[in-house]
Image (cartoon, helix red, strand yellow):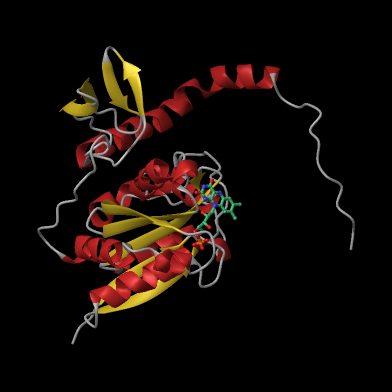
Length: 279
Ligand SMILES: Cc1cc2nc3c(=O)[nH]c(=O)nc-3n(C[C@H](O)[C@H](O)[C@H](O)COP(=O)(O)O)c2cc1C
C-alpha cells in the first residue's frame, strides 16, 4: 500500500518534549495509512534573512547556504504537515520566526505549498501567559505558504505533561481529522478571526480590526460579528503582495544612487563586539 506522508515539525529543543509527543500522537491517530517523518528545527541551521530580496526574482535563489531550502523541499514532498512549537515568553519559540523570516523565497512555490494541509499545535505552560503565541504561530506558518487547517493548544510544563489533560485525545483527533478529511471545516471559537485564527484586534474607524489579516468586526452584545474579510490571508492577497515586493526590488536599481547618498551620510559608527579568545 502506498502510504501518505506526514511531516512533523518540532520547534522545541527538548527531546521527547510535548510538541514531539503531539506530533507522534497525531501520526498514531492517522493510523497505518500514513508514514511520519520528523524535523527538529533547533537542530538545523537557519540563518538570518539578509534582506537582499534576490530570491523574489525569477530564476534566482536565496544566496544563504543553510538548511532552509532543504526544509522547503521536505514541505514540497509531503502530503500533510503537523507543525508544533512551544510558547516561549508569550510568543512562539524564536526558531519559527527565523524560518518564517526566510519566507520570501517561497513566493515561487506558493501554488504547491498551498496544497499542503497543515495542523498547528502550540504547547504552553499556562493560559494566562499565552500572550500572542497562538496568533503569531499561525501567521508565521501561513507565511511559509502552508495551508493552515487547524490550531490546538496543549497545556503542560514538564515534557509529557500535555498527555495528562482530559481533552488530549479529543484535540489530537481534531488535528488528525483536519489533515485527513476532505470536508473538514475548522470551527473557529467565538471572538477569534475566522480567517486567520487571530485573537488580536485593534480599534480602527469604529471596527475591531484583526491585527493579522485586517478582517473587520463589530462588537455586538459582547461578541464579534465579522463584516468584512481582509485579503492578507487569501491566495490572491499573497500573490498581490508578492507582485508588490518584486516591484519594490526592481525599483531599487532606479533609485539606488539617491539612496546611496543617504546611506553614506550614516555609514560607520562605533560598533561593539564581544572579544573572542583564541582557544
Ligand atoms: C524559556 C521558556 C519560556 C517559556 N515561556 C512561556 C510563556 O510565556 N507562556 C507559557 O504559557 N509557557 C511558557 N513556557 C512553557 C512551555 O511553553 C511549555 O513547557 C511547553 O509545554 C514546552 O513544550 P515542549 O516540551 O514541546 O518544549 C516557557 C518555557 C521556557 C523554557
